[in-house]
Amino acid sequence: MGTVQVGAQRVGEHAIVIGASMGGLLGARALSDAYERVTIIDRDELPAVGEGRKSVPQGRHAHVMLASGQRAIEELLPGITDELLAAGAQPGKSLREIRLVIAGHPITREAHGADVMLASRPLIEGHIRRRVLALANVTARQRCNAVDLVTSADGRRVTGVHVRDRCAGDGEAVLDADLVVAATGRGARVPALLEALGTGVPRRIGCPSTCCTPAAACACALARSATTS
Ligand SMILES: Cc1cc2nc3c(=O)[nH]c(=O)nc-3n(C[C@H](O)[C@H](O)[C@H](O)COP(=O)(O)OP(=O)(O)OC[C@H]3O[C@@H](n4cnc5c(N)ncnc54)[C@H](O)[C@@H]3O)c2cc1C
Image: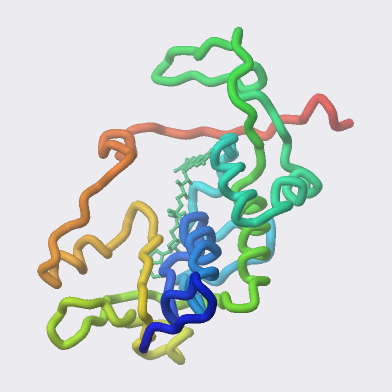
């Protein structure tokens, strides 16, 4: 695969994104400006808007979209905020309207807090998925399990993904790419695959490991909104 120069921004022909969840979908949207084709692969069957799926078990819990995330998503997908609000997402103030208890300590409700949007995860993900897959150069391959990375003979460059499952005719296949992005979430095997290639484990940035460990428990309950009859 070669580098294609279509306009100033095109840097390659084909990018593969592993994972069709929030990270993968938004990553694919960003890459669609720079690559001729973007293929998103996911091991799940991708459901209709509003329906949950097996690999995103946290989707059953209520989700809050913070203002900065909302702005970033709106920049990538103009109009998505209005679309979500029209579909039933609720705007709110993070402290005044949401009761937060962290490690047994109720968080103050005196301040307004930030603007947030409350919605179910399948609603948010479903609308974003619909918009991203409507882009002419982005496609998704479902029931497509990435089992390994494929490299050049000298092992210095990732050249594709070894996949298994329905997208490979229920067998195995190799999908070639100029760039592979792993957006496979917390249980990602990619660090182990890179270590096996001898590149070392990528440095973890942002969230400290302690906040990513499943030390917290979550519980949700359905409530009737004061504005609905
Ligand atoms: C209980 C709970 C509540 C949460 N509440 C909020 C909230 O209110 N607001 C908020 O912003 N965040 C919340 N989060 C965090 C949020 O859900 C995650 O940050 C987000 O889902 C991460 O997205 P992601 O795309 O990185 O990975 P994930 O959502 O984990 O998706 C990974 C994707 O990769 C696919 N995949 C994995 N391995 C492979 C493979 N080998 N081959 C092919 N596909 C593969 C999976 O099928 C999946 O689609 C919450 C999390 C939990 C657990």
